Image 1 (cartoon, rainbow, N blue to C red):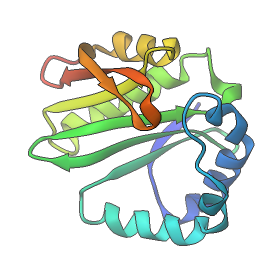
Image 2: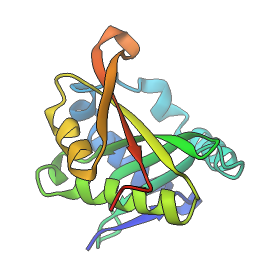
Image 3: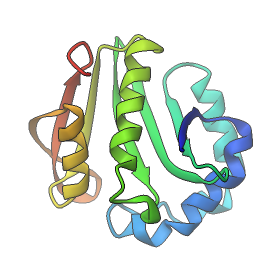
Length: 164
């Protein structure tokens, strides 16, 4: 059984392996992180943990039974009771409900542990999987957006008081 855990220093090796193993898969869907991301991974990981201590970001990893990272589930721009949700799941874990379960659990944490009342998310128009996950969890489309790189997308919102 996979468990959603708040990002810690000891997650770094498994998280780097996750990012490397899924780089081409992710790059086919979202802009590639670039070589600099991987070259400076340790420094970036430490910096994200430092920023997480401020409460402005809340990063999580979905850890499988063998300690491998199956996904990242993040809350960014945390302020005034709201945050933006972002996530990515390993290619080998897609189609098994992993993303839906991870997003549901993060919504529960957002409401019960972090005291948030509203989440937002965005996805590209051609990402049917993410649109489906957001819909299953209760997010509603609230408008059109243009994502980084110029891709058309949809913005979503979830009132956590109404989420189950």
